[in-house]
Length: 225
Image (cartoon, rainbow, N blue to C red; front, side, top):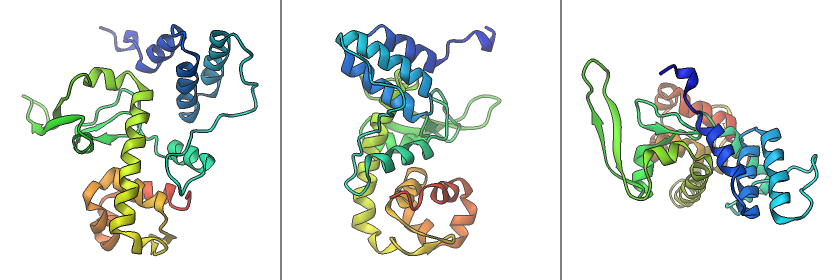
């Protein structure tokens, strides 16, 4: 099949949203799309939500913010953080086991109870890659086709990372790392990439130089909240 002819998960997500009649759910999906930078598409969905509820859609020029799940972050700060944490395509799966918009690691999905048996597999004639067994009703196909689901998982993950950072690495907040004061947003962004190796990243300049993607995420996000 011609790759150009393959359906795009984001397009399918929008089409499915347009078929919905639940105005609140349509509006939630619009919020996620706006947070991903698809303002025009989000506006169309909100107009559809307005028709579904029989009222007037929210006026353009009045952006809806994500509701912050963290007490330390305002809605505006959280929305900015979400945008900065979007580093992949909705349907992306990397050989190292990172999935979707936020490149969530399979190991993290295992921590959250969504998959089991995370393992490295060898394919004939190809480099090894990571895979896992998804716990029903979740499937890889469903996850890769639903940016709203990816966002909801991201929220749960960030709330847990927030608790872990404050419990184990509170003393790192305010410390200058890579030329910038460490804040909660920067440290949970590192956790998204490094997981339990956050402490090593904080304490080791060699690790920070070695894991450039992780350090770049810190540079983008520290200071947001």
